[in-house]
Amino acid sequence: KQEVTQIPAALSVPEGENLVLNCSFTDSAIYNLQWFRQDPGKGLTSLLLIQSSQREQTSGRLNASLDKSSGRSTLYIAASQPGDSATYLCAVQGGSEKLVFGKGTKLTVNP
Amino acid sequence: NAGVMQNPRHLVRRRGQEARLRCSPMKGHSHVYWYRQLPEEGLKFMVYLQKENIIDESGMPKERFSAEFPKEGPSILRIQQVVRGDSAAYFCASSPPSGTLFNEQFFGPGTRLTVL
Image (cartoon, rainbow over all chains, first blue to last red; front, side):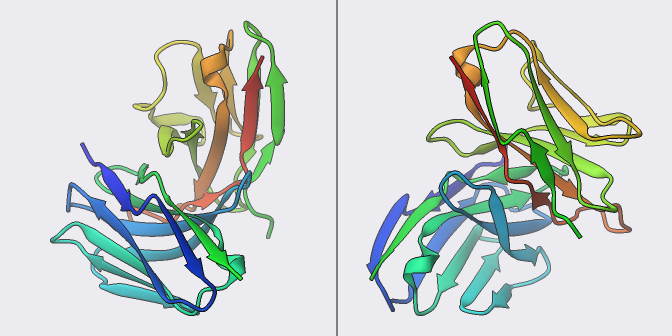
């Protein structure tokens, strides 16, 4: 059974800092991994999707890496801004269509 | 191109009533997924449907919950005889049919169900 863990559960940083969010999964037989952003009381916004054959994806100030063999992914946020404050969710898609989610990292960027 | 639409956005029911949650996938998408987010918990898969077919319902509670995706109209998640433990945010996602086996899922804004 696939399990996804995200560390830390919460993170508070000053504006402008570079930061890394971590995601680990127990079954390395995945097809892709997605990072999402969720604002309080809102839905999920897809940030990056990494196919299993890829090592990383970049979008603006975001960079996500994937090490399938070790069951790890990181989301790197450069030059953080208060608007980046949200909960970041990691999800993997394995031998079925369903996504398995971690519980998320709640990020607060202080002005 | 409108995104995934869900309604209602907020739903309040008393114990024992029925709740119907609707999801309209993105245009051109024929795969629908339902997920539930309990307070302080991560999102959990409930069911995966294609038009007129339930493909995977391994995450659905055995009783009171059902889902459908008819040939015409939105997908419906139905909860009968709701209990307080059903209070949660219910998210719908959709993905397109394609030659690849697994596709990116796009999420709706969710329906927040409160059971009094």
